[in-house]
Length: 163
Length: 286
Length: 143
Image (cartoon, rainbow over all chains, first blue to last red):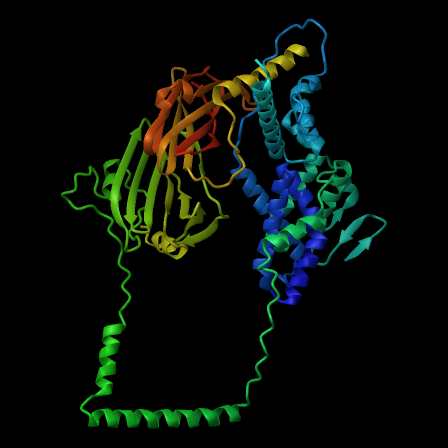
């Protein structure tokens, strides 16, 4: 890369990195994946620097490239463990504790939040997506990851419990 | 860009107009759908300011990635791809000599060369050796006409295998309208053809072998079934169009891969071939 | 509330017990799995057929179905709900050994008029390395 191209791409990143990452997060629900996709976008820009440096709609090109990567990623993403709909048992007895009490320690705030939204508040994925300002598919992925994390922590606790 | 502060409208020559107040009245889901709709357009029609306005409204309402450090992220990117950012030295600008100056040395060199060749031929002939004849022989021996033969795609008739070729296997299943490749790299030879027919599933797989590895071709159909599939890949697909068909070239763990589908079948080719070879395989499809 | 929470946690623990920890699902390439396809069709007389095709990267020590999760809904407008799961650990026909690929059709009984879809968890193992991948079919109405 020449010095001018170096400066060009650095300036492009300074002006767009944060907003692109926010956009990618709304599609994936995962900050690491969002960062990967944005970096892949800039990598594409570096490889095509000769053609994009005088592009008439460079900002549009950046956003569209990221969007292509994000939507392709989401369409390829595994469905993972589709969260099981809970079979509610009719009637209740005893003292009710908040659901949060039962979730294992070690879950992150966002993981707790989405589990509570889906299981405790019985929100639909559309409602969760609206509340979190994310794509519905990203919410499904985020919940699936949170439940998987929940299982890992519960199994770890089970293994560590003295007999 | 001209911004009308009163109405909140944003105007860019050649770009769409949008009203901030209208965007602010949308729900979060509607804003995301509006972003999708905008970015689905061809790049020359994308209004980046519209996309950014939607993202900014969403960020005020439901902030995300607040802990993200763009500076640190960029540093990581530069470290990971440091080779890309090495400053190339600008090649020295060559000043082309004027035409007049260029012509004189060229003529001089040509003259010297012809004189030298003449001396060589005369001298060689004096010793009983014809250099011109020798040169022509070298041309014939050394330059080979490129014929691009295919590898072996059919097992010998006396092979104990039930099917001797992909073509024979497809015909036996009543699959005569599927795409068929007619060329594979020369070093590959067919080793196995397998057919699986189970209650609506038709799957024909051929394996070709070479010293460098394996090449697999597969045709799959699930009759009267609502089906979906995943082809593992580790690269973004390259769309390749040939003869009005669209193929997707990618790779999976070091093996080149091409996938495509038509109304009835899903196709896959995967193996140790280069991208160029994969294109040639796809070009051979009848 | 307490019973609802216990039901959720029980569901989590049950799946843990039967199928073990899921492998990471965010890798984009697989050393073991080449491709996997799943389809669903209504065969009549309440019978639903799930067609499965799995290809490994070369020969695998073990390849096949780890789980088929079945969802249903009562009408096109309704939400999908969990119906049943079929596990590889419970059916020896769900796996092939020392094989490059696996194909099978699995059947289950549905309720006529209801709509079904399935999610396949494909599995392949060679040596100490294994991998899973998930794909969801289209939908079909039981008849």
